Image (tube, rainbow, N blue to C red; front, side):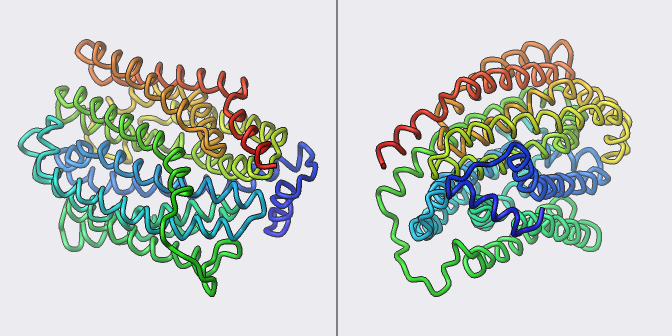
Length: 464
């Protein structure tokens, strides 16, 4: 879809105009495709990273795999802060109040900087102890600790990159942040090759390569948002950067449940790592690499979820509640279709995909078994991912967070702990597949009941 046509269709939302079924589908797809490409390129970046490290041996792979789930936790906390502000921006854009959107943007820059420095401090404080707490063997503790420290130091730039990208997407500009995320993958591969192979820095080289890629991309993302964005540029527009109670309070209501969810979900991933750790270095490496491969399947779901967040956010702000509900259901259906196809491909080519990651036959065998188990959960995993994007766009984050946490802790971890001693890594992935199917089902129930819209319908009516 041409840029002008897409902007015209987005303006239909703000102006309260009627859209045909075909126009709605075209808009969802046009917003989803750049984001899907960016998500897939990011996955390929991690794929190549893991492959580069994987060819250094199982110890190097296990070093990164041990702390990988904790790095996800840090990234999730940064994302929660960004979404707390960017969802507000989407609502104001939907209401055609661009000055209020820029007011939120200014305050978000200050608040997210403070938050990212707090995360950085926590990473520095625990980096030496974390691999020990996670049950890592003595041979991988040093590399795992160093990798996590460098990742923590990249935190403020990761936060800036995520915040600026989220703001651009919520304004309807998917192309720029998606293109820059693809560029970040190119940076990452180039710098990783340089640090790992040219300078022969091993695991530390992988961390430094990623750090450099994030740093450069964050600067570019900030420039496009703050200097080039038609709706949100701050160039030549004065205003206060001082956080105000109403904006921070709303950001907290939206972001805090997401932050809690990411914390406890990240904690659950860490517990999952602890469950896998006693199975040995090969199991840790196979688990880590299989997770990286599997992400190729679910990244399209996250791309569609980002498009849904934008459309739902602007629709809520414009008071277009019937249109918003239609966008929600169509987005979820599209996500389930795409991820079903990806799951079929993952099942068929699981050994070949694992072979790209490592030459170790035992790791390939265990990883391929895990991927084939997970393939059956992909359709319902898609439902959970895209439904969550819908709920975030509406600012409905508390109940979905509780639902996700119950699913993860009560279903996945309980089953994994009981199955792992008997079935090994296969048992852990069986538990994961069952839990993701359960989570998708309960999210679909909430979507079709429509409870996620009620609070914001009331707020819109009160504002009128």
